[in-house]
Image 1 (cartoon, rainbow, N blue to C red):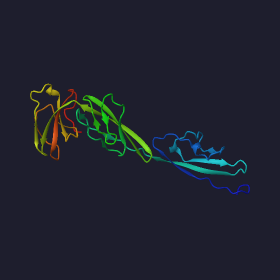
Image 2: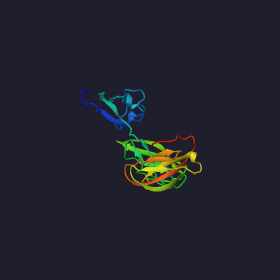
Image 3: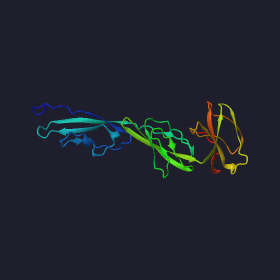
Image 4: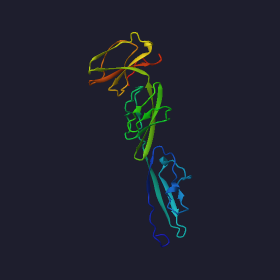
Length: 235
């Protein structure tokens, strides 16, 4: 009892915020129309939610009855927006984005390209890329109310492609003989035009075993690059 009146203990509050929230306004949690309460921190309008819990104390001015309530915050981790898209040849679509983080987000260009290239928001497949152009792709994903984004730079390569059909495990003979600028040639293996983006060999002639586990239609593409590029990469 307080001055002959019963008092009801204040309701504690459990709030949820995303990991990128650095400041919260505790006063926004006060009951509508109630003024004069005191918080356990000096600046309740801007506090780091990680430093809680916080205590709110209110004294009813007529009865002088006092009660407290506690506010604590649960920090929800941000989703993982990691992904990659392999470089691809002009004249072909890129492969779909490979998401190593949380799925279910959307893809876009950021910034928007100044050409006719387009991107599928659901798969990340780029169409209409211009050879020699870099495209910055952004992936935005939301999980449990928290959002994250990341970007990845994809290059549309200038490639001269010769299509052929080979079987899984077959040897593939490639020659740079007589090709202009052959010291800078890189050979690409594109599986079913899906642009897996594996460099089979660089700056050399020879025979190479098919890297595909299935038979199919392949393009062997020549890419012209500066000598400073690494001789071979696996994506």
